[in-house]
Structure formats: C-alpha cells, structure tokens
Image (cartoon, rainbow, N blue to C red; front, side, top):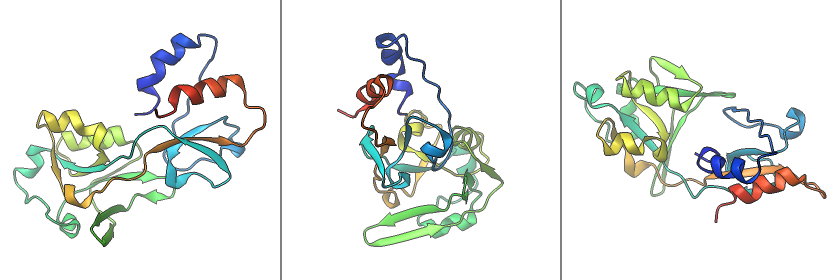
Length: 188
C-alpha cells in the first residue's frame, strides 16, 4: 500500500540504489535490526524516531463473502461477531484483538474462528473463499467490494485511523539513498 505504488518511479529515478525490503507484521526495532528505515502505523513508532506521514488516514473494513453470509445473519454490532467464524491476524504480540469505535463507545473484541494468519493478503483470500469474516484495510478490499465479491459489515464502527509513517533514527548525516527514499514516499 505504501511502497509498491511508488516503487517503479523510484527505481527509474535512482537505478543505482538497491532497496532491501523485509516485511514484518508489527513493531520493529530498527536499530537492533540494523535497518535504515521502516514503514509502520503511527501508533507503533518509538518516540525517539523521526517519522513522516506516507499515507492519509486509513479505515479498517470488516468483510465477508456473499457465500459466507448466505447462511448467516449479518452482524449489526461488534458483539455479534461472537456468532461468526472470524479470520484473525497474528501480530508478534499474538492474535490481533479487533477494535471498534462508534461515537464515544469503544469496544475491543477477541474474535474466534478457524484461522489465525500473519498476512493480511492471506486473510483476504480466506474471506473470499468463504472461510469466515476478516478485517483488512479498506484500500486492500476496495476492488472486491466494488465487484461485490465481498460484503462490508459494521462500517459505522470503523472510524479512520492514522495512516502509515516512514520512520528512521535521528542522524545528523542521513545517507543519500535514505534521503531519496524519504522524498519519494513523503505524502504530498
């Protein structure tokens, strides 16, 4: 969602720079991992890092396939999810607890289901196959929703969240390759 849309232009503009990309779900300690920079949701970035926004705010989407909902009631409130098979995303800290908000009400749910997966793309594929309800970024499922391959539920319980930020340790002399990447990804 962040790197791939800008990758072609970046590699064409900077053919001598090699990006070594590692994908990890959840927070990463850049210094301990010897990484130059990371891309993460703002809430997971350590306070001593320089952070710049690379996406607008995001929304999560709770989705299921028409096949799945053909024999089940569509949930109207987060607590209704207890009657459904939910595909859970695994973070390094454990299964993600689904967070909902409506007005002043906040609810966090530990969902149950047949699968716990550490990759949102696989969560979406499982949902498309009818295995259960999943949670993904709205942008990731927009095409499936438009083509009615997925049905969105609980939309009024999923307000915008701060988007992705690129972050890196404070350095007086930033490497030129990192400066080029920062400029390429910066949200304009």
